[in-house]
Length: 177
Image (tube, rainbow, N blue to C red; front, side, top):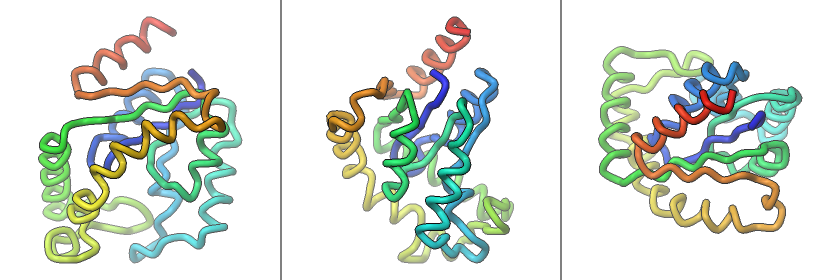
């Protein structure tokens, strides 16, 4: 495992796990959100985003997190492993609520000066919480189907259904090194 893509529903812990894997395996960490979001929550132009991702993937070893279908072909073509965080709805929603509350309260900078606000997070159609509600079930069905596609047959798939399973998988990485 030298090129790992971590996917899952919004709020499942993709970035947290990617950071842990990167640290344990001494791999560069790539966060797709950081490549996608310009200041003021403006998405990068599609070709700019693809170019950024292509450049980020140019190394031989990395761990990347994110669900952007616009660059899945680039990421998964180069990846050797996909880790799918397939956690229960209640767990993910609870984590997302706590994270969003914390980020809004402390005005944590995310990418390119962007911050989550209470208004945006809790009272907007563009809320990350609304996004999670719209996409949670779709992602859980979509990924197993994608893993069966012929263009992704080269991928080793790791499906983790709980934080305990993720912890055990992380420990197994220590034994592989």
